[in-house]
Length: 379
Image (cartoon, rainbow, N blue to C red; front, side):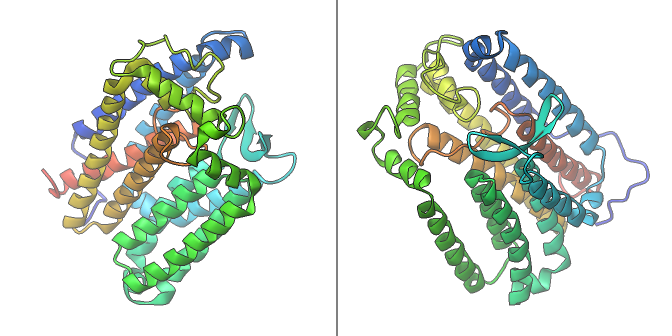
């Protein structure tokens, strides 16, 4: 398909993608404003400190998404290696003493004046764009030869190694999981895929047992009430928030767990506060928004595949895998289905880099959808 159109017709963005994305952004603004009030008052002396910063992040994210929406997808296909190289450079820079900022034992942030950049978030997007372009250029190798499969695995190994040195175990799982998912959907040989996947899972197990704090999190996850004031503290407080919510919640702003009972209430555990304040109904509504968004992204990917535009299809599949993986892990951790791990909830958790990257990803998918409609690839 030729996507280098000289004069583009005016087409509105896909209503399903736009409405689901905006709805999640609105939920995030409400949830963060409520969850951070007391913490912001005590920590920064301003009740709306985090809400104000989140509004700034949101404005930057929307401007970035608008700019990216105007960029033809052919640009991303041709420049994937550039973004991957930049991501690897940033992942190295954040590890340099005096350059990267360390918080709670993890060195994951690059200070940029009053704000910070989290390279691991950018790495997710860069990996998707690079792999999508690689699988188009090396389609035969990827599907039929070992070297076509092992080359992206070497790149993935380098990225995940840098992420683990930070350490950022959650980002490692998401980057590796989305990469494996994209390669599987690209049609790699099942034997090759299963062999490498088994090796990756084995390495993951070694990483888990190699650090005492990860083992402690795993054992605490199986029975958090056995040590509710130490290793199981965060999870038990999160579960209490879910229990308080019952069917209809305590009402927005009325959470008790955000009053310094539940750590990271406005970041990694914002879903717990949302559950406490809106109840089972609010939780189901939020999950439905994610299902609608991810389903629509996959639908666009399927349309791109049928229109013989594999790059667009792979990008959509990668974005859907990142969204669904992060949402599943974050919600699973908050509700006790998975061991405790710090990972943002897409579009909802507090964090500038995560919010900007999520919006940019969605904007690229919208651009792919636009080009498909321009070429008659979908109604």
